[in-house]
Image 1 (cartoon, one colour):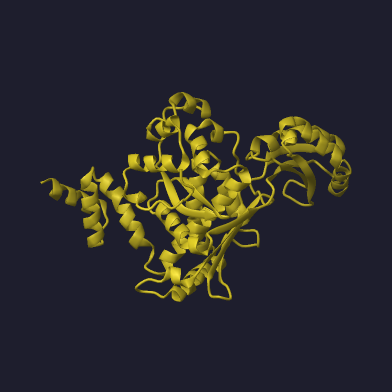
Image 2 (cartoon, helix red, strand yellow):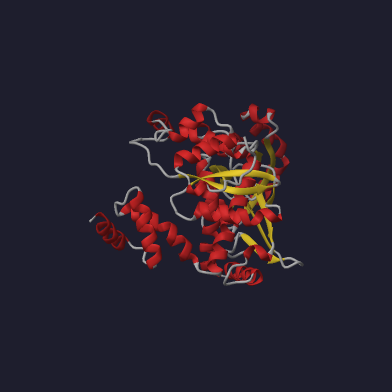
Amino acid sequence: MSNSSQLPGFRNLSPSERIDVLSQHIDLDIEEVALLRDDGALSIEIADGMIENVLGKFELPLGLASNFMINGRDVLVPMVVEEPSVVAAASYMAKLARPGGGFLTSSSAPLMRAQIQIVGLGDPANARLSLLRNKHRLIDLANTKDQLLNKLGGGCRDLEVHTFMESPRGPMVVVHLVVDVRDAMGANTVNTMAETVAPLIEEVTGGTVRLRILSNLADLRLARAQVRIAPECFETSEFTGTDVIDRIIDAYTFAAIDPYRAATHNKGIMNGIDPLILATGNDWRAVEAGAHAYACRNGHYGSLTTWEKDREDHLVGTIEMPMPVGLVGGATKTHPLARLVLKILGVKSSQELAEIAVAVGLAQNLGALRALATEGIQRGHMALHARNIALSAGARGEEVDQLVRQMVMDHDVRSDRAEALLNELRK
């Protein structure tokens, strides 16, 4: 068993051989290896219990990003994604980060908000003070709903009251329950607490409670990552390392000031984060919603990352964003492969998973910026995309490699070109 996340030659192996290598690294048992080799790891019976009106299963590739060192620990990162170049870019940027110590991460406590909307109030300011006066009654009532969470050190921690004196529907007061959800994503927990305290809120305020629901803007549940890379790591035959760093910072600055660029820039970050969230059975839509809302926190939509030069002219990148993920509940516990993915990651808490996610997002962002700032995004991406084109044209086995080589050499990656090449090859 090896603790290294470096897997030299991994990309050149067959899927079966990659499973053999992984089993040696992670010490997988026979059943876990069988899950990876089985096309039907998610049984139709389990799928039918996960959502409604199940017809079948829809599969996506499960890949493995290598080379990640996070807080001094080597981490293999499983990723579920259909887009070529994502896994390769993350792995390569993680490799560039290793000489400087890899990624450093931190996170805040796993705090989520539940919102309770109150309408029909003629005295919203007075209602606010009444709620704050009864704060501990409300918190204690909320904490009666999840004794296990209390035993684990979590539970409702605070209460906030937000007053909207004017709206198209009149004055409105919104109560926030701030809940430590520990290793859960927390949606079910905070929603139940919100519904539990609603009658007491109506009693205290004289108003009418409408919505009782969590907020996906998890701005109290933040994860952070940093990376520092020396100029020589970026040197190519065409560009000096210093030139590449300057180009990367120029590209980042574009995203920081322009929302049209920022949307694509942040999508590139989520190209790394979403596949990991999906692989662990977490709610990637909740993570996306919180990320993009957080990107607007300064009054305009901007970059979730920053890229700078330090005093030694090293490139320094940072990211800080909401990361509401869990290790318990939902598909994380239901899906057999999600449980195996958590074992591969070696995580012990939801905060550790959150920190790995933002480190991967930072790496993915760097990969995109480096490509955009130098040879352009299409050269590497289209070389990998050519495999998809070859497969869609009907190529199989060695035919795929031959078509890919020819299309990349011709700088002509198109479906009709792949079909023509395949016809010539089979003749």
